[in-house]
Image (tube, rainbow, N blue to C red; front, top):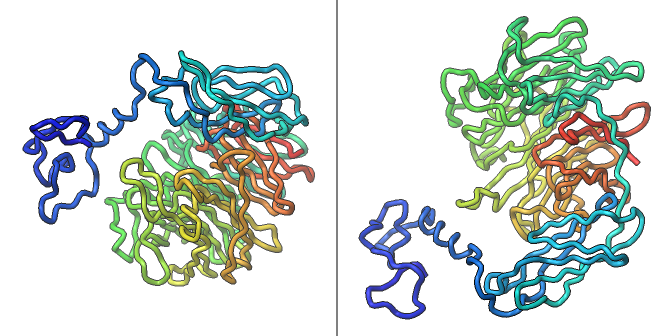
Length: 527
């Protein structure tokens, strides 16, 4: 397709290239018409990729050839007084020069013209069923009709803004001295903030950022956050781990009921410590991507991704110092993995045991860097010693599953513990299931339960779990799943990024979802 011989043969190719311009071993060596002995291509190279992109580009406006065929893969998704319509172009979209798509609503007289998918249809009534017909148009005419599934719009959960000045893209929830607390980011000012619920009212304060006193930093600390509460040396302590985006470090702030203490956990080492070294010290890797922490009788433990090497690290607080370890991602012996681990993680403690749930990417598309194979892993131990870790693979590619991962959640309701994650079955890069399992079943090697989210769209981050249900992103909106009856409902039809965090929180026996809505820290009360 990409090589034209000297004597042109009609239809043989689309570009004329000179073999001599692309010698073996160079980045564009795949552009030659034949392979040299023992020559291997691990990447097509930028020139081949660019040519393929050119071929897929819609040709300039001209004379269309034929009427468009029917739009493909049409689908209607539930909204709040609205529906989201998704579709793929007709198979002859390039040649037919499709100019627009018309969507008609049944029942009613609503009609909308669009040029791309998805399309939001507003003005619908909650509780009533609607279906939609879609046609593609060009200068010669209109395609046949494609009909969607029926949907019933739902009322979203009532929203209450807690902090309108902070975007709260990252957050973590806990309970300290019997009072609910929310640690959250303020990216506008580069701060870490804390909201505390007392006597029916919320109060907020800045924990770190834009300061030099008392161990604080002037750096941007509005990145990833994790929180854990527990007794350390007989004192109940609120522990917050947060990213220093300026330095790519991991920081800690601890509150003992009287004062705050601060420390740099990792990232400010002398060099990036290679993963092959078993005796761990402070590293210079980027450790600002993701973390999760627990407090057990063995002490305060935090786990975090080494973005520079794709491994999972840990640190245990030993007095005023930190003791370091490599948790996973370094080898295939001892039930460990060499996958790229810890893009998402969550840890919980149950008595003396620490559970750590995380994803592992086993292979990626070399061009898009999207995962092609992935698995969900669980590490657990009853101490703070590296040699005591035990490992399980809860879910992995194969048997009809393309990729397991995309996000993870872990919860402890006192009597049992549960884990949840996403999975794709058709397109490796697009999840279509939410999956979950309780810890007892996982330790016995049983399979997880799965639920298709088709009526609400592809499940995406954020993901949060409690003993009743899961919060998850659903194609730009926010949804909830009831674990008991596996029913999915709409939380909010707003535009939610997959880069956000969310969590459940209970106030006066009422459940709420905590998230950034319209760039404000917001509570959404469960219906």
